[in-house]
Amino acid sequence: MTLRRTGATTRRVLRQLGHDPRTVALLLAVPAVLMGLLAWILRSRDADFSRFGPPLLGIFPLIVMFLVTSVATLRERTNGTLERLLTMPLTKAEFVMGYALAFGFTAVVQAIVVSGLSFGLYGLHVSGSAWLVVVVAVVDALLGTALGLSLSALASTEFQAVQFMPAFILPQLLLCGIIVPRSELPTALHWLSDILPMSYAVGATQQLSTSVAVTSEFLVDIGVVGMFAAAALLLGAATLRRRTR
Amino acid sequence: MEPAISVEHLQVIRGGRTVVADVSFTVPSGTLVGLLGPSGCGKTTLMRSLVGTQVVAGGLVELFGQPAGSPNLRSQVGYVTQAPSVYSDLTVSENLRYFATVLGVQRSAVDRVIDEVGLGEHTDTVVGRLSGGEQARVSLATALLGSPRLLVLDEPTVGLDPLLRRDLWALFAGLAGTGTTLMVSSHVMDEAERCQRLLLMRDGRILADDSPESLLARTGSTDFDTAFISLVADPST
Ligand SMILES: Nc1ncnc2c1ncn2[C@@H]1O[C@H](COP(=O)(O)OP(=O)(O)OP(=O)(O)O)[C@@H](O)[C@H]1O
Ligand SMILES: [Mg+2]
Image 1 (cartoon, helix red, strand yellow):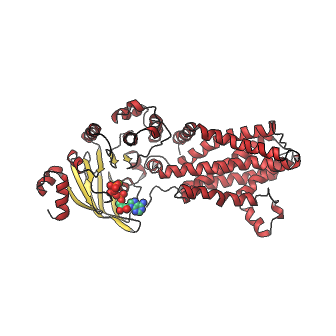
Image 2: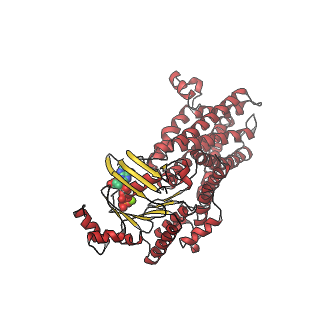
């Protein structure tokens, strides 16, 4: 894998975003407005805002980056640029890493804007470090990008790709512990939630909400999310086929 | 010298149908070959097999003595797909700069290829705002970037005005003159006369593999449409 080709791919994806200012505006504004709405709804329930706010700071980028990446890679498949790239000396790993870095960078900007507003304007509090919330948000966004890259291989049309959001993300949202604490789920569902990455993404922010110091549970949670992201990126590279039927 | 392209008993099955059936031919280096045949006869499929993006059911495809699709060949083969495969949301030069970096060629190549395909006025135009023919030329320019030894061009001149078509065919002939091998597909039979060698295809088979002159002489025709028709009527001529 060369830095030159990976970096060129990253810059190219960012440049495509740059030509689409409306998408950039939506990427930044939608989560910011949604967090503002949540703060407003829960304005007299500080405890609830601290419970729902931090996990959502991580879940927004996960969902947004999942969708953006799915659509972007599907577009590469359907417009023939992926086929062309794979006849060139670009490795699958460079392609996948190029995307991960581009959307990872986008996620950093998004996380800083949304967290900045949440902590500075909407009055969100966590016991731990607010910066670590940003770190979790970025790792979650990388997970979303990685899942988007690998799952988009299963979709052959845009309609299918968009359906993957409700199919793969919504169940995780129900089971990740923000609606009902995971310990209170029926046993089978608890087991299921144990193997879903979003459970750990939410677990990490919950640790930050409640503990001042960095706990070992936090490190495990964020480590597991990182491993899911790495595994999904590997899967994403593996599902790229140079030869097709 | 090793042939640039060597295909033996190639068979491709797509969607349960045999779309390339027992095709064999070789092309020496530095030849401009035309791949002609009606829509759906398997031109694109054959070209995809050459560049190694098509799953094949049987046979052997080698480029410069190496199996099609091997990593070594990736910097030596330029492929232009039938539909323009460039980023429609980037400008012409942004597209070419990206592909230049991927191919590891000098930035100066970008200006050279923009010139070769006559897109000098549109360097900073977003590709999505170009006409279909202009987009096709951006796609073609991309394949010219690395000065590959073999160029596989799927209908590169479709929809272009006669002047530009003439210029591009002159460019192709010039490249062949410097040793580049080119395979150019078309379903416009008129383009046959610009090639040094013709592969006529029909229903997944090679109907004729000949020079344009000898094809006309052999079928007693004055144009390639008639030659094609008489070959279909009597493949033994
Ligand atoms: N993705 C696919 N799945 C199944 N069958 C396919 C696929 N693509 C093409 N085919 C079939 O393979 C045959 C050959 O197609 P191909 O695209 O190679 O033709 P072509 O000669 O390039 O035609 P055209 O001049 O219209 O581009 C056609 O009959 C087509 O229906
Ligand atoms: Mg075709």
